[in-house]
Image 1 (cartoon, helix red, strand yellow):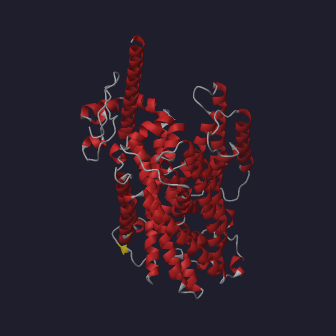
Image 2: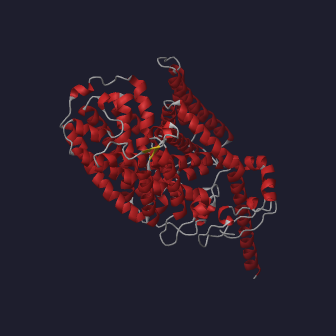
Image 3: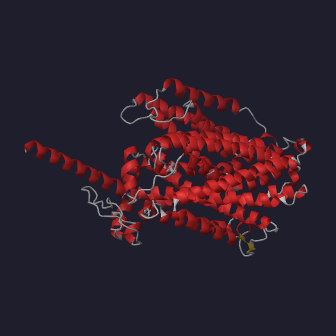
Length: 600
């Protein structure tokens, strides 16, 4: 087989690769080496066993040791450990500051929230920082390329991890496509054109998919080439470009404030609290990207030191920059005059600083390029680790021995990104991206609570029952608050019930359930309060997203489940059983060797 040869287990005749990959080819066995896919008869036999297999894998949790060693070895070659906290901090800044601030700020300020857009960034920033804390503890304790996929697989099981991972991949593809389309808009501005001048209008297609963007495809292709060659080289380019980007941001703030008019903030709360939270849900897109840094833990020299410093510093700098830029934009002109496509460039043009729009456009292009680069690195590593577990074909897990990068995964993910970017409007992309991201961040916070309060074989049945009860109450009260917010414009009665319910559930978890595990190296402070707050805020922001986006999200989730039931479930089941058989065989061999030594 393409990934090696394995043994059959007695129960099910499972055959799957257990040896390291020796190279990269494109045979059938490189994609589907498991016994289920060796013939139609095997596949149909496996489909008839879907029920028992699903019960086996539904709550099956991976072991940390397996994620750190056995699963990593399936790539055939190690990723190179050449990143430090400086690299990670600039990766975080480069991953986050891009089209969100340069495009969505104008879109939301113009028609959704007005000058209070700065408060929307504060709300989104708080939610993102809470998620940063949760990600950091996991990344330090489980430093592998799988990021949140690995964390969820260890704490919540294979099934939840797969659903989340599918949405992670969707998040990266959509995020990259949105940034690439924004890149085209600012490139047009830099060349003295209108933002949409370089799009091709295909009248035969639906309106949301009819403005074709060939420039975005070219940009993604170049990014793909750079990301596939070297992670360290990408890092050097990223922090040089990010430093230039920060200089441009400082210029925007200082130069913009010289044209500030305080009267432009007079109607600050025109759209009220609902506008603030609606915009926060969309603007959360502007904070997406820091999770890509957690996927680089496997390539970090000292994860316990470098990851907390890199992630927290990058998110703090980003939040301050966003708030300063948002308030500057709203001080420069009335919110109704803000351009939704290239707000900062047009704002400088409107206040008589036409020359400044070129600096802004150049800075925006720099920022979006680094976002695309870091996204390309992160998404490839997610797919690589999924493929290591056989939830995706193991061909994607191949790490090139010369570059130390997952070239197959990088190319495939960026091809998908290019296709989406070519067709799809930015507004659709931003809303759908926010749903996937908020959903994943909520699950990571939930997984952290499970990690701290439950250890198999150590936590008593009574404590486990209390943990499940309090977690369900935290989730239920958060969902009820979000649903009531989405369904009612002016009501408040339900909040008198749902908010105290969340407080009592969190307090109950803190008071009555003992923590079963303490972090070895670095841990989230104020557990369970911070993770519980992260769950509540992420779910609340989900309640502010439009219905059509949820419909698209639902369709994507259904497609994921179809893939899982017909492919992923059987591939992971075969792999798990083969691994168990191999481990049992190894234990027997070691026992025989000890017996022989004793007799001799």
